[in-house]
Length: 164
Ligand SMILES: [Zn+2]
Image 1 (tube, rainbow, N blue to C red):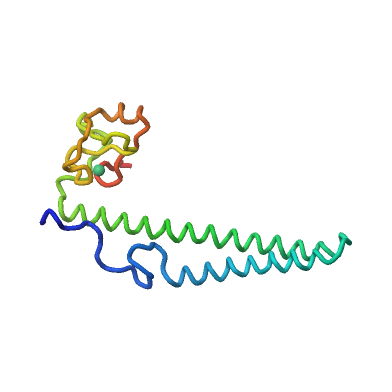
Image 2 (cartoon, rainbow, N blue to C red):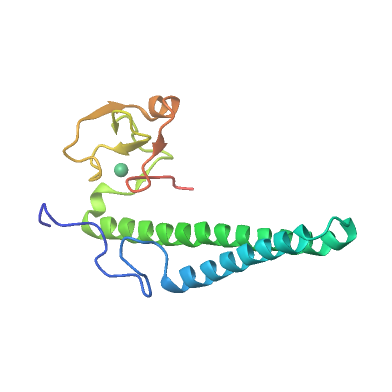
């Protein structure tokens, strides 16, 4: 493996707009459509209810606006979930790639093994096994797992994995 090689999968996600975006074009279209529909329903509800001061006539328009709000909210939640799903999938691919390239440097069993040589970067929120390639060549500090936990650090998802 050359030093300049990248761990990032080179292939594009099928249907994605760009390799830098975790959203596929079809997700974008569907969620944008739902969000716009929600905004239209809110606008229709607002315009419809603004022409009258009679509460019983406003109720239906308010209902339309509430439905629009729910649709727009669902579109936003769907947007976040679709992105999260893609990021999780990409992370699994990177971990599988790391396993294939450096099988000896990954998959530390935290249930029993020696956890005294765990390292972290200054100000980082994750701790790593000393041989982790994500911290290779960087100025790290060594501490026990308990010390990392006390400092509020989480285990690296690549080199430190729970056996559970
Ligand atoms: Zn790591």
